[in-house]
Amino acid sequence: MSTDADIKAKFWKALKSDRTMFLGMAEGEDGHARPMTAQLEDELYNEGEYRGPVWFFTSTDNALYQQIQQAELAGSQPRAMAHFASKGHDVWATLHGNLSSTRDRATIDRLWNRFVAAWYDGQNDPKIALIRLDAEDAEIWIDASSVIAGIKMLIGIDPKEDYKDKVAQVQL
Image (tube, rainbow, N blue to C red):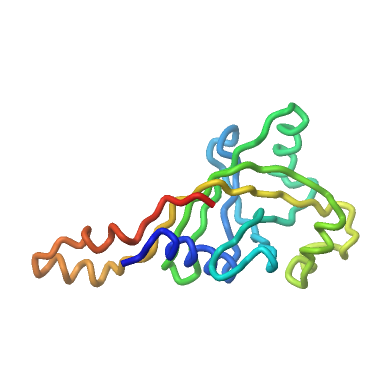
């Protein structure tokens, strides 16, 4: 039986490994999200628990970055909806939280890595920016093998009973 803490730990481990999320604003974009690479700070990750923002490198001409900037200038806090599916399709999640933008050099320098470098004209590229997701809560699903569920159905066992321990609504 999985606990909410177990499910949350599996999510953070999968996100730390796989990194790609679909990120968008919860309002104002008609549900449009785009794939972006999540950056987690190693020193904030401990034993399956992560206590910090999720960062995304972007460009100042990125539409999402510009929409966040417009919302911030108008004095509002843009809300995020982010979606994640692990490469092995064994962990899925939907996250909600607040979005903000920054071009803080110290944060860019701290998060810089060779994968990020491939997208920019050096670490001092004038278009480099960051989107910050302060995740508040998530619904996380862990794979409950459809093959096993199918076999159980064939022999008259309700597979939903096993699945109830494979989903969690958690605070992040």
